[in-house]
Image (cartoon, rainbow, N blue to C red; front, top):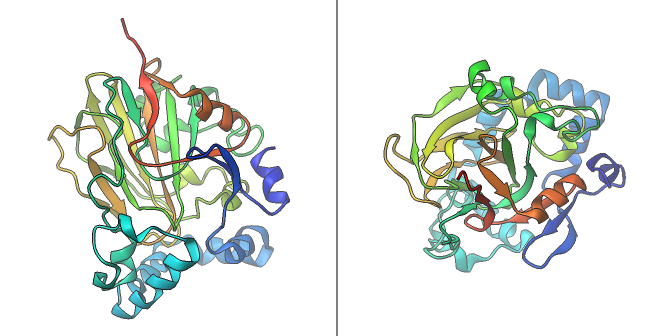
Length: 308
């Protein structure tokens, strides 16, 4: 069943890698999302106001206030989050944003130790594309992925023709720090300005171009086993900011933290040159079937392709 067909039935399905079960996503803010992207007045409001940075900045500032901390415990209870993973006690968070981009305890996200493994960069729902330039049904039939606009560089897009991409969607209920999927030396972040549309499938089936229209941060990683890798942080509606916590030019290990998103759902994408990675079969199969795969930071998503 395609994403369009799922949404027509009022649901978003995904495969949970932890138990292999097919599940239906509990969509945070579902009614406002459906209004903004499915109702003519909502689409007008989205075009005139919701996609603009000032709305997300205003809401993000509200999530920085002391009073916003009152939302934390109800949020945890509603979505069944595991407080035992948090690095700090819940009562120590002075705002909802502090809780939202919380750190986890050491060992809460084990990193796959195999030398040839490449790991997920974030907790969330993932789509894997073995050849992103050959993709012709990106969320809707007949939609190709615009690599040149996404990377903001025609020469760089040429380098990744026929390359592979993992797209990781972080829901508001997810851990919101993102990590390096491989060892390497990351360069400085490059900012591409843009809008702040939602990255929920409810929005994407009406406007798949969101990924190359929203603001993003592009970071090149020179990785011995993978060549040059592009890591793209993608902003979205109600994301107050994209923060980088790594040091450009310093070698990072697989699983090291790269940065975090403040309040809101968002996405990261990782691009690999042609022939450099072999994604796990279940990820590719689920993607072809129109299903995201839920998995966590540090779990294997594929392996480096033998260049010998």
